[in-house]
Length: 162
Image (cartoon, rainbow, N blue to C red; front, side, top):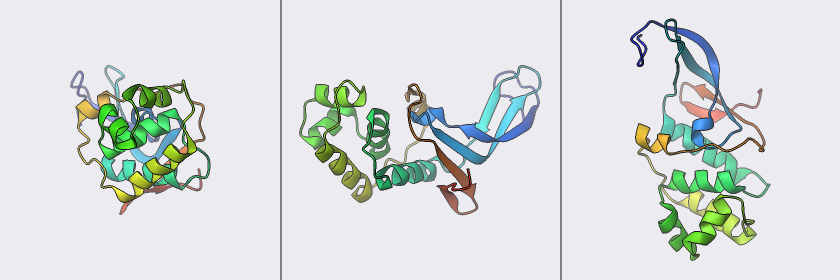
């Protein structure tokens, strides 16, 4: 394998990756390949089945008993494939209200928390996980419970051992 940046040789350096690209700062993936270029030092992570991974994360979020926080709400909206404007319309609120919830400047009402969980459970998720879409996800400072996921032969699952 060759480095995408410089064409140098890649060496597998690990199997654990903090998945900040999801926008959720406390997600850790186990069982993935982390490759490092021996020439320029660039790192790449091989994450198979991103749609399945995001489904697993969404299921873990909606199954939790604690309230959703701002970055989790944003992740679930993006998981469903909604723009903020369309999602605000779906929830029956102004786009500015949704923005305040997603930026943690206002608390998410418990009824909205429940409706979002129902939408996730009962709506087909987005399946287009292009590099452009992932590049738009902006992580925030970690303040959340850690989630660890493990890649198995048949897909992603919560890693209870981590």
